[in-house]
Structures are given as C-alpha cells and as structure tokens.
Image (cartoon, rainbow, N blue to C red):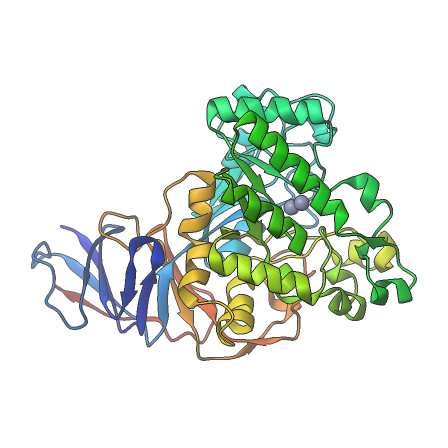
Length: 448
Ligand SMILES: [Zn+2]
Ligand SMILES: [Zn+2]
C-alpha cells in the first residue's frame, strides 16, 4: 500500500529549473513526486484502490520548489545566544528553505572535520532542513595557514570560505584556488580589502559622513573582487563571490563571464532593496558587511540578477542579539537576519513593480544556487523528493521582528507590509504551516 498526497487548487505551479509553469496538480507517492497532471485529470494509474490519498487544497497559492540558501550563519557552536542550528533551521523552514549552507565563522571555527560532523549531528536532531557546512579556507580564519582542504572536503564541506574575513594573502589564495580547481570544489570569497575598509561602519557617502560616521568605500569590495577574479583566471579555478554589493563588482563579474571564466556571484535581499540612507535612518539592524550602498548600485544588482550575471539570491542570514546590536553604529556587529523574509521582500519590492520576473526570482532561489554549489536542486518533477512551497501572493502581512522564528531579531525589514509569504512547506513528508490562518489545508482523506 502506498501513501499519496494530491496537491490541488494551486493558481500556478512554477519551477523554472524543470521548465514547469502553469496550472496543474501534483501527485506525491511516499514522499516522492510521481506525476504532474492537468487540473481535474484522473488519478495516475499507479494509484491503487487500497492506497491512502490525502488531498492538499492549495487555495489559489503559488506553488514552487523549496529554496536553497548558499550563505547563512547559524552561530552554533559558540554563538548560541544569537542562533542555534535548531533555531536557524526552523527560521529557514519558515522562509521556505529546504537547504542552507552555513558559514564557518563559529567559535571554534569550522576548520576541522569533526566540526562538520558536529553540525551534521545537530542538524539531524533539529529536523528535516539540510544544513551543509562551508569549511574555512584558513585555520581560525586567520589567513595564515590553509585548513586541511582534502580532509574538509572528505568530511562533507559544501564549499570553502573565510567569510567575514578575506583571504588577503595572495600566495595562500592562489594555493587554495589551485587545489580547488584540481579537486572541483568551490571557493566562496567574502571580497573585502580590510586596509580600504579601515574603521568604516556604513557605506562611504555624504549621508553617512553627515552623521560623522566612517565610511566603507566601494573600492574595498571592487579591488578584492578584481584580485580574486585575476587569481581564479590564472589558476583556472571556479570562483564564487559572496554578497555582491557594488556596481563595480557586478561589472568585474560580468567581464569575467564574458571571457568565459567560471565566476559566479550571489546577492542578498537587503542589498537589492535598501540603501545607505535607509541605514542611517534605520539604525544598527541595517549595519552589515558589505554595507548598504546607493541606488546606482541597486540598479546594477537588479539588472545583474535579472540577466543571470548574479546567479543566486543568498541571504547572508547573520543573527545578532538585541544586546549586541544596541550599542550604536560604531560598536554594533555587522549583519542582518534574512531567511524568513527573503521571498516576500523580493516579491513585493522587485516582482510586483516589474523589475524582476517571478520566474527568475524563483530560479535564483532554487536551481541557480544549486548550480553554483554543484548539487541537485529541489524540483517539482517526477522522481524528485517532495520539497514544495505554497506562497500566498495576495495577502499583505507586516513584518514583526518579535514574531520571527530566528533567535535574533536584527531584521531591517521590520514594519514593512509585504506580500508573497511562504504559508506552508512540504518537507520530509510532512506539510508544515508557517501561519495560523493559512489557505493551504488538508481537505479530505479518502481512498483512491
Ligand atoms: Zn561575508
Ligand atoms: Zn556571511
């Protein structure tokens, strides 16, 4: 006997990675997608009279594959007052994510194989969201000695990054890229020349200067991207640029891709919709690395996301407790949370006004990030495990930092009225509701 789930009533099934876009119904057998049918079509021939069929009434929602975030910070071990693997996974699930890649700047640093095993154990206890560890490039993120790259790859590292720091030492960076090229693993660089950043806390512009705050020039990012692109080219290595924030970095990536280099980039929701002026007005929840820039950068980022120059949306979900953030711009740590609001922020601010297509937004959260890191994407296609989001693109809800699932509340979107909330997800065989009053419901259980 098989257990079936039958998804009906969706306004649209959208999986750009599988070429699926339109009305339809999904038949799921024992957790695996068995068939996509047109609305009202007969049950697949495999459904037996003794099988149990649960109907999931999608009530006019948008149905997509679940999302993959290739850049988050879950803080455990060592930062449990800000986030844990369990709270971060729950936060990700509520945002519609099935998979997150967690960065290595924990305490201790993820620079030994047993640290990956530890995260894997915690993630398995936490539930069904897959948590992949990104290994440090250098021991302790100190930029002096590389980790045992081979051992970390063997332990399951999903990529290599000194995120939070930049591997400035050119000899070491070259060595890492050379090894990565030989072994087909991915280096993910946080590109920041810290000599140019200096004491900067927000983007260098007049509104920040007027507040008497030290700025971070665009050159801090642009120079680092240019150096890394040059090294990757010389070593014939794949290179991924984290959280691109400047028009100059977009330009460097675009030129590299035009030369045929396998350079990819990601962009965060906050860099796509917020400016330095918002940061000055909004407070320390808007202080992050790289800093929020200016409209000309936002325009370049949106164009690059739309045309694929920037492959993926990644949130750089970076939880910090209220106490750590409540010390003013100069002393507060860099970072903002993001997994719970990523889709609704980008749907409301980019898709609704027509700056980005819905299909490209979904692609940049599903198949595109998976192409960057070289993994199977969640898909709505026969044979794929059922990892499905239901998204309400009608009902406006106001972001309330206090009701988010993350252990931290440093959300720069607090108070915004947004549409496009994931209201339910199907992961690990179970339908999870993200709100009390959702449209999606299990309508009936019947025999097939
Ligand atoms: Zn970073
Ligand atoms: Zn980061």
